[in-house]
Length: 291
Image 1 (tube, helix red, strand yellow):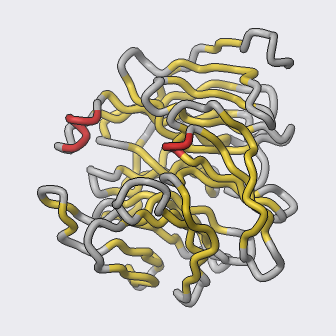
Image 2 (cartoon, rainbow, N blue to C red):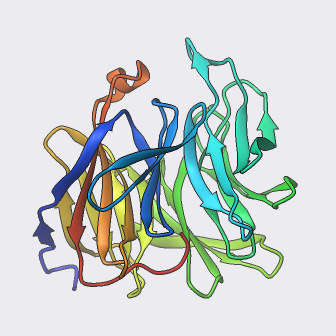
């Protein structure tokens, strides 16, 4: 589709609700998984809409799995009156319980979205809470060793890795764009560049096999399919007044687009007043890469 053509608009159907604020959507082992940040749960969902609590954990966000099957959860710091009162963590969950891989006790910092490569290397957003272009992406090894692999970012968010493992894409929410990095053999990132621009409040992200991305346009209340360069080919509107948080391509053929939305606003969300919803729509082009 060229820039001059109008994007195709589609209508989604509701699958389930009853949670607070969904984030970090993933398709894993035949089920849709997501974090309920304010509700303190990681859920899985059958396509019929039945919710199952998989993990109870404080302020979960990003999700992924190590090669041994262990679930990894990144968490936001707990806050009170704008100040951190609990650490930001990256937690491994296995049959023996929950184990901190990483814990950061600084004020006004936190982790958010995360993607894990097939070799177990994880990439996670790290927020410094100071505003401006001061946020980072960290690489986390399965043993908990960390390294900053990208900095001077403006609220990095949803991330994906291409099927060949050679490129990491990330939303940069406050810059309204998706950026790309080259992934080296040691997992480090380089050659930051634009992938798609003019994407209002780009939040969650997933990739399809044609090389386009689905993006949650948070405050604009719609999900956008953007080709490289930013041309919008498809739009799916969230319910009126809802945030459009994060999409994920899943299902047996990866042609079901799962979309997390929330009935809230910035003031209400600051008070953890939100009502989360999960919607789906069938698409023509299947998902690709990680997650």
